[in-house]
Image 1 (cartoon, one colour):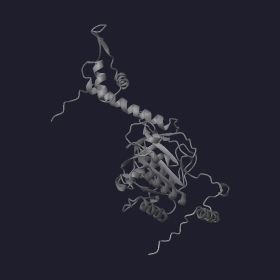
Image 2 (cartoon, helix red, strand yellow):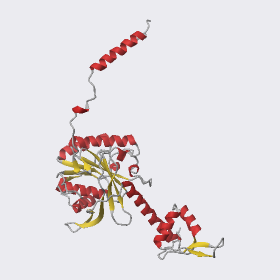
Image 3 (cartoon, rainbow, N blue to C red):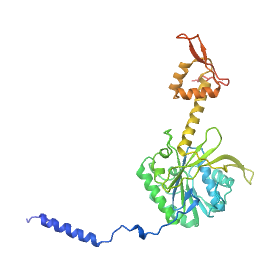
Length: 366
């Protein structure tokens, strides 16, 4: 049997020849790089002037039941009737809207809310037979629907994690999906608004709180946080740090019931006329503080139904997850004034009396 012949050169001289020839072939092939001077500069185009751009993805994140979907309805209403956006002198370019919302029934929830927002329902399209859950198939399906509906200005995906089957904690999957959606937006010169829930980490950095992965906000061109403003009854719509140099002021709104033409009622956003300067991180921190204070108040109402040693209530509160500062703040809100008993010195102690509206916790029945 003869020896097997290999084509790879064994000698150093032969290997050098191979490298020289491969270099010549590489120099003859066309480069995939292009001088930036050959690319025409383009201005950013807008769905909502200086807030929501077209040709890319905008993410709206927030806690559940804080008005994210209602903001989507407000955006849809403004686009379908060509109206003015809040705190803006720029009218929306009138067009059609596609809304994909797996959580709200189109007939009983979504349609009444869109009507309450003032939408032209003839210009809003929703799926009637579902959609593919695989990301790549969904992107193809969505692009075909955009072509069929025609004159689409914005697609609202609410919430994104309920529409496609992805691991929301996987940064690569999230970025790949947002990149694909950006491609769809760019090809059709539309805006794509993606709604996501905040995670439950309890942190106060807004960029880190989007559902599962930092990439939800990092990979999008623009983003907004929706959060309740403590006990004021208002909600805030504030910008997140973005990569297109935008720094618009935040907006405030209230959620109210509006009467429909058929006599029914539905929730809708009522925007306030004055912008707010609160940052996303500050809004989130205030919201967390307000929630914690309210919980601490309820804890004291249920726990302090007779005078109790201050050290004991602090210990009980710490076991329940409250810091001494949070408990003191709650005590002050309830008007509880500690009293010194037993005199001064080691024999004395501070006691917290019950609040005027204390609600003793009833023992559970097994």
